[in-house]
Length: 367
Image 1 (tube, one colour):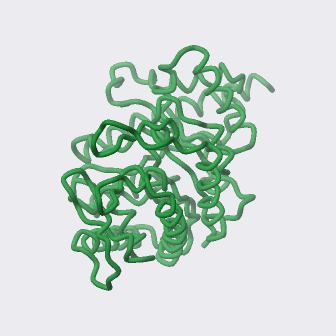
Image 2: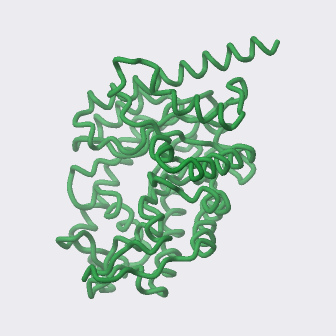
C-alpha cells in the first residue's frame, strides 16, 4: 500500500485536478455491475459501492454495525420496525442480519479486488460515523444508544478498531491504493442541537457538546492515520459545523453546496468563511452538486455554485489545483438505474472539465 501519513494530502493521493467522485450508494443489487461502472467512469477516485436496495444489512447502518460486531458481538444488531437494535448478547453466532451484511461486504470486496487489484491511487470506502450510529441504533429497551454515555464511548472505541481493521482488509486486497475513509454523519447536526427525540416523541436527548463531538471524531481520524489511511466526513446538513469538523482533523470535507446556500446571508457568510479556512490549510473540499441531470438542458450550469463560492472566497480559479473534488450532493441510490448513474457522472465530468478549462484560462491570463 502507498502509505498515507498525516502529512499526505488527499490531493496528492488522487493526483488529478478537479476529479469526479461519488458519495457511496448505488441503485440496484448487482455489485459487479456497479463496480464495473466505478472502474470505467471514475479513474481518479474510485470507491467501494454501497447497494442498500439489497435489504437490511446492505444499508449504511447495518453494514457498519456488522464491522463493529466483528470487534465485539455486543454490537451485533437485529432489525426492528424502526431500524436497528442491539441484539444484547455475547455470542459466536451472530444474528442473521449481521451474517448477511458480512457476506455482502465480502462480495463487494471480491468485486473490488477483481477490478482494482493492480490499481494505484486513491480508493474510497464509506463507514457510518459514530454520532449517526449513536442516534440511530437502539438499546434493548428501545431508547437510542445516544442516551447511554458509557455505551456511546464503547461504540466509538469499537468503531475506531473496526475502521482500522477495514482499512487493513482493503489494503490487503488492493495493495497499491491509498485508502480514503469517509465517515457519513447525516445525523450529526441533530445530535449537536438536541433534535433527536425519544421513542415517545415527547422529549429529546440532550445535545452533545461540540468540543466533545470533535474530540471523538479526532480519535477516529488519528486511528485512520495510524492505519495508513486518510479520513474525511460527509454531511448533507443545511448548516454543517465546518469549524468542528476541521478541528477534528479530517483530511477532506464532503458537503452539499446547494443546501448551505439556503440559509440567511449571515449564516452563509459564516459557513463560507469556515470553508475558506479549511481551504487555506490545504485540505480538500468535496463539493456536492444537486441532481446534475436536472440541469442537462443548461449544460455547465451545475458548476455555478462552485464558481460563486470560489469568487466569494476570493480563490482565483487558477489556484484550485487539486483541492476540489466534484460529487453529487448525496448518494445515488435514488437514481433509479445504473444507466442514470452514468448520466450523473457524465454531467459531473462536464462540470470538472469546465472548471479545468477555466483554470487553464486563468493561468494563461496571469502569464
